[in-house]
Image (tube, rainbow, N blue to C red):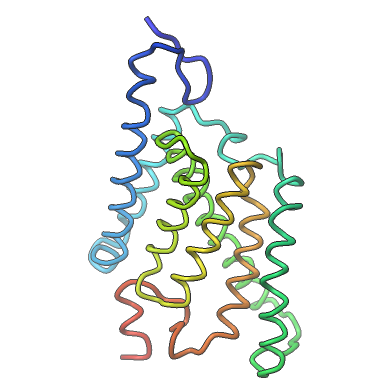
Length: 228
């Protein structure tokens, strides 16, 4: 009888170990299909279905014996992750800042309680997105495929396609998803990545034409932006 030796890993020769890539790939397909279906069909008719999807993800963590460290939710690796991802993010921020101030799309405003609450809320939403993209999808994909670059590319595609049909977000999230996944594969921590996404997302929303970004909406809501 085989025995589990570490989180999500089985002893060599175990039948369970040989099936693990298939199980993980099926998980990714089913959960991603559920997310896409929720975005495009069930968000209006079954608005709380997302709870079931989160429940499936949590059960998966339990079955795979994921730890906080493996999920990138601990403080381990945070500094190493930040040292890689934040300089890359700055290379993206600076052109956006220059463009925004030049076109007067960005201005300095005093930070009030409402603005701070909005920033905090968006930051938490970005952290949740990176939890799904990296802690769940990327971990499962790294179990399903051998190449870390391929798993990172698949994360980028998953992340970007979840933002269809918003053209600006599709491009930005596909590229950022791949880069973030590459960093996560080496330094498992989602917090600097989530911070980078939050700042970058706000800058991108501020400088992008409203006729294209539609207040960062995705799915059917993108087409109904501005309509009553």
